[in-house]
Image 1 (cartoon, each protein chain N blue to C red):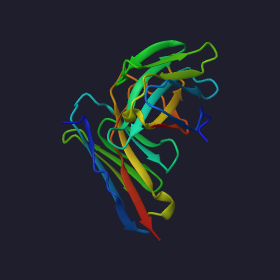
Image 2: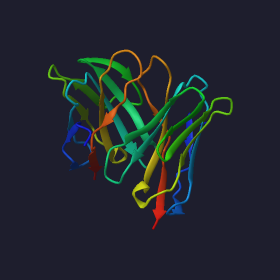
Image 3: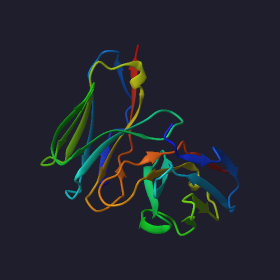
Length: 114
Length: 111
């Protein structure tokens, strides 16, 4: 168990809908990262937050947005969902700060768009 | 050309064999090289990381980096059925928290 929690575990929804995925980082970790994993693209970095502020952006679509709250939990919002958004979404956390820090991954949320 | 290339497998080997997993990359700015293991229906977990070129050993696992060839490897000695998982190579450059992952190689160790 990495100490990172994600809810829900599974989500099934329809095209055009909007969903919110939630992540609680390990105790003491200030950085939260969101990744998307699909068979086609593999594990792709979406976005990083550090202590409430956006720090880095990857291949995140404009239909997707994220935020990190004062208690450091984070939410990833996916809107106008398309079939191609079906994937595993992982959250990871790290201490943050300068230098390389190990990222600890949560168990993921499996999103199915029908 | 993708930044990181990794053969998806699957790779099936008998228990006790030596396993070799490899990745190539195109960005010479990468400085940190990692291997993650991902069991089915779980998140990735960090196995090993190395900085720049060279070898690093941890128990049955050895990571090698050849920056001149832009090639990294993970060797597993005395492979066990519990090593059956997907192995993802990953890379970072200094000053950036973004990790670039390979697509992963599915490994099956046959008892």
